[in-house]
Image (cartoon, rainbow, N blue to C red):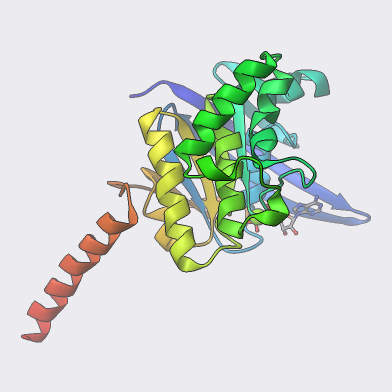
Length: 255
Ligand code: ADP
Ligand code: MG
């Protein structure tokens, strides 16, 4: 068994809206291992983002414990949580969340600014990262001068520049067309695998779930099932699997 990065014990999350109580997560106990790729799969409102936000230290559980490499996150204060995110966590959002007044290069260097890396070194590392995501020639562009797919590439470069222990991606391809979606997934998965980083992807899309080593099906705030699978590493692999499926179908119909 691999070393645990997160260990969740009986996690419950209840939101209060005036008189109303919304149980977003019921009783979640699950272990995440270092270097694996996870997918939280479920329909809208099932509690995926709530779970991700708790792993990221953006929300606290109402009950239960979230242990990150031996330390319970819910015991940290706001300042310690901010440090946790800066040091160990990278984010990819559906809406990219780039700063509009900064260039692509400057956006990518941001996480290093918090870590007090020298300016010359920040720029050097950001250039390498931008190249790795295929945007070496767009360093000086502002987000508004980039396509959606290019903006997401910048945000992927930003997520990984710190070499974080874990990268969280909440519906990272939600605003992208099908072709760009798979390019983006191939890119995120490729970087995470190469660096043996833990990746937690939130999605409602079963095709995206095919990239994960483990799919955690969430329904109404509970874990419905967990599927271990042989993950694909790229879209082309997924297509070749489908070809094999097609072959079987043909056999069945006698064609
Ligand atoms: P998903 O990401 O799977 O679409 P969420 O985790 O965002 O689902 O939400 C789970 C449930 O919790 C939903 O019913 C949602 O309305 C509710 N919820 C999420 N965030 C809040 C909040 N800040 N305040 C109140 N209710 C919330
Ligand atoms: Mg969500």
